Amino acid sequence: MSSLPSIVLRKPVEFTKSQQAIYLLRKLYRETSCLFDEVGRQQIKNRIRERYRECQEVTDEQRRTKYLKDARRVLSTLTRANNGDKWRTLNVLEHAYGRRGKIRHQIMKPLLKEVVPEAPIIPNRVRSATPGTTPKLSALFKGAVGKTIKAIEPEIPEFSVSGKPFSLSRTANMKWRHRSMILKRVVPPLEPVDFERLEMLVMGWRKTIPPKRKFITRETRAGPKKLRPNMYNARMQRRILKHVLEQFPMLEYRPQNEKFVAVYSPVLTTMLHTPGDPEDFEGVDDKGEPEGTILNPNKKLSGKSAAKRRKAKGKATAFSGWLDKKKEEGKVPENFIGS
Image 1: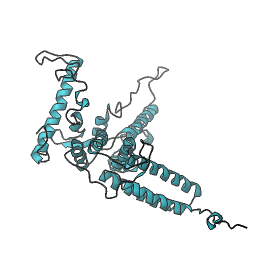
Image 2: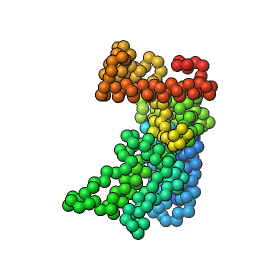
Image 3: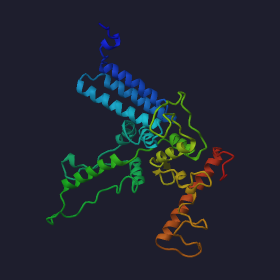
Image 4: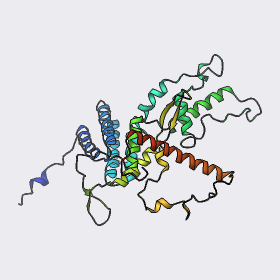
């Protein structure tokens, strides 16, 4: 009688949910430590730690199974980001900077605390009070018009379908529904330090702090190479961070008007490619002018051509002013072409 190997007779190891959670936590930390952006590494790591501590107190088996499934999904996203999937990397950085997720709610919470409801539309009915606003929220809403929202206030008809005056209760409901929709779509503002840091990174005047951990090599389907390390060169990093920067505004207080304004970076209006790339000449004719514009600057323009030229001039003026300010602060490198 032949004896079977001991490994065949050994029972399969079954891990408890707590052991699976610790195993996933280590893998999540390992994948997070390979992100090329230091802010993304720190913010995602903190969020993973907070989420793990929140789920430790859960005793319901179904909820614990769901949380483990969510952790595996996040691990898959981080793994694909570290494998070179730029859209997964962009998704991770959006969570890190507050475009979506729990960090977004943490940024918006102090802005919403200052809101005071207006007087009720229907007397002696508190629930008919329309949502109020603050100077910061108003600036944020105005800056988001045409980007993530269409209008700040909803269009309320004067009369109903039957020809009677529109109901006041329906008016209050429409305003609350519209405000809830705006708050879901609006992008929270960035701090000036983070906003300036992204501008410096996009312009190539600053480099991200590389991760200490070596890139993880794993089996991939890309090409004949079975093991391919995660490699994001400087150009790819700038393109990904450009997508992040163009979504976020910065609240700027202007004392001459005594109000807040949501400002988007003028860096996004410039050519962010290396000189000589094919993308530099898209939308430009053989004389270097934008396609569809009239070349004579003395001729009076009207309609779309005038609006297009005014818009292009405003963007160029904004970027030149921003560049002069950075030169005064000494943040422009000497080898910059435009200096």
